[in-house]
Length: 181
Image (cartoon, rainbow, N blue to C red; front, side, top):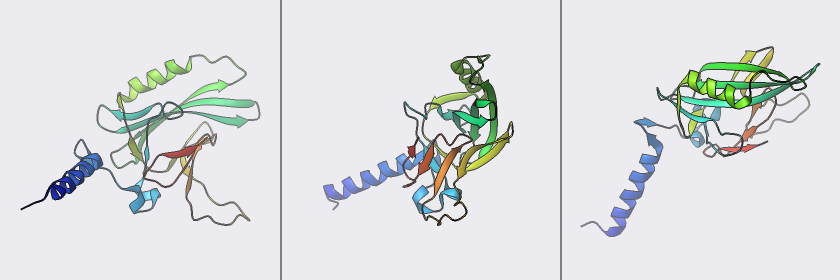
């Protein structure tokens, strides 16, 4: 005879498994391994991760606004990234909005809307991503693992920067979407 407590534990376990499995795919557990290979979640919010979700094909996407400092001033970009179900980057595109002192050709929301349409973004939801880097316009874009600089002691904590502007820094525990601006 099973107790009410046994039923409660089985129900809790099923709910936990349902949370880990969405649309038939199991999310890796970031705390189980190196975030470089297991990935970490990007969770949509009302601040810096507004444009995170799934495409019509079930891939993850993230559209990020970035900047880079150049001799002529600060240059603004809009970057669109698409990830496979394991969090590996499969497509990227960056739009150069020009120097801040110049008037941009298109409003930011218009560019984001066009990129969402192009990648077939369908819903806003949590996705798993792995660190990556790509080059556009002479700059490194992506989620780049911070390396210790010369003379700096090595830290056991992994930090990941959104590049090229170092606009966000992600950190553990990796089962959460922790970031600073």
